[in-house]
Length: 301
Image (cartoon, rainbow, N blue to C red; front, top):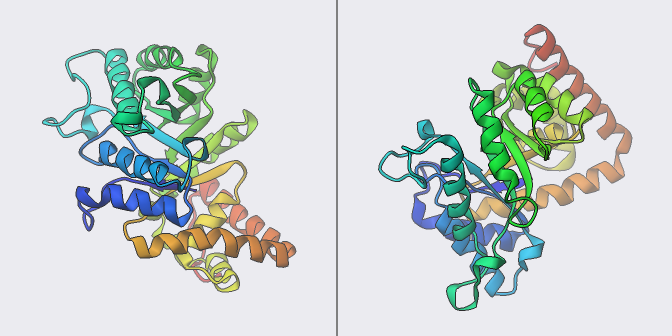
């Protein structure tokens, strides 16, 4: 589970560096960001990371830093990390350079541009233009593996993803998509990812799935493991094959709860392996039925 540094209304930009630092202190090692001043503050994400490294909380090698290229529809036109008049390939190039600078591991006196790298860089696909997406991907490949360790793609359906894989040299390591009823829980994409050993990363999990919090299996896991229903939903989604979750959190107090989630889940699954297996199967079957038939199951089944 990655800590998502995306901006939310209750927390303005000036606290992002503090929250990232506190997330690392609490135990998070994966940080999700993007070159998008409208929704993220990547320079302050980088500051929080550098502060944690300087204090000896972690080394750069301990962390998994993820960034993303996002198109103009998601950007503030007055604050864009690239020249919007350029073609897609050049815009992605400038976005990568911006992220490499903002997420550099050391403060200026101790930092070299050669030290900076990104563990995962995600390209927001151009859904109506596979050719442009392929061209941008081929440019991303020039940063691989020295400056970008893994390449990912976002916002794709299974046909687009399959076509992309057929045309590129470096295969995606990860697909980041919204996971929810409206997308039929991305069943086809998740199946393809599993077959190709790609990680499926569910984002906006609680934005699109408030109904799932009322499911009986979610509530049972929350009670058995001693966690909130929202974290129980995280656990069950992560129990699907090859799936991880990006988790937004906006208070330092609840960061500790998120980290404790892993310990409590480990204790529950070790103590009650059969019950956990049954819960995973039940959740997976319910998701599968909804994806196939678009039928809503009773909330308190």
